[in-house]
Length: 262
Figure 1 (cartoon, rainbow, N blue to C red):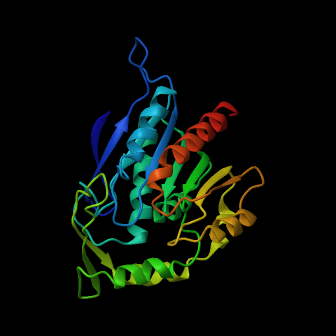
Figure 2: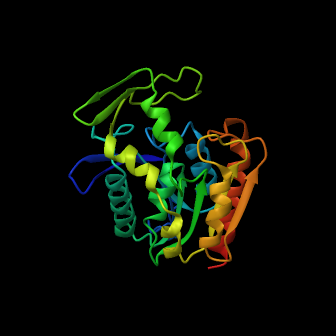
Figure 3: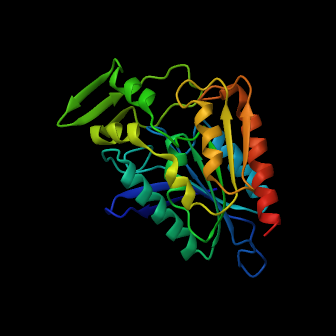
């Protein structure tokens, strides 16, 4: 794994981890397959270590893998979090992979990162995996951040001081700035955007998710291609820490199958 840096549309430095598929003796990368991972709101490229674990497993199967911090998150430059900027950040990450000659693309998104991933579908995207995806209005996320004890609102920006002592992997940034319009926009996501996706999609969702209801993903299947699949994990919450291995195994198997079928 190597750390890489690239610029966002606004010229901000974005930081990622890149696992390159094994090279041939001539130095060429034999695999054109790449999986790009997008994290959730106010999280980072590790996603509590689960992105790292999955990336290593995918890499052993011959995939190139990229996980990166959105602007305003993790090790990337400070910025006010906006969904539009995250969509653009992923667009530039995809462009970076294409410059490396990696044009067989798979996307993995978690929570709000799922919405960002789905918005970046194009003809080079062979398949998409969505963990606990935000595909519909997210009023609970909005209310949850507004009720945070450690927060300030300055010039229409929600400044959150995150404290998560019980989480096994600490966030790199402890202060997150979120545009209030972004929080409002989360209440008006419409699943109609899923109709634009023409590749197989795997959704994995816990039935105990109290942030994004599993019912949203059940409904989302009506908009996706018929060769898509939904896995409901009994007992899993939105963070699903105890069920991480299940999510990872389903995802690994899906990507291997979808790219083997190409």
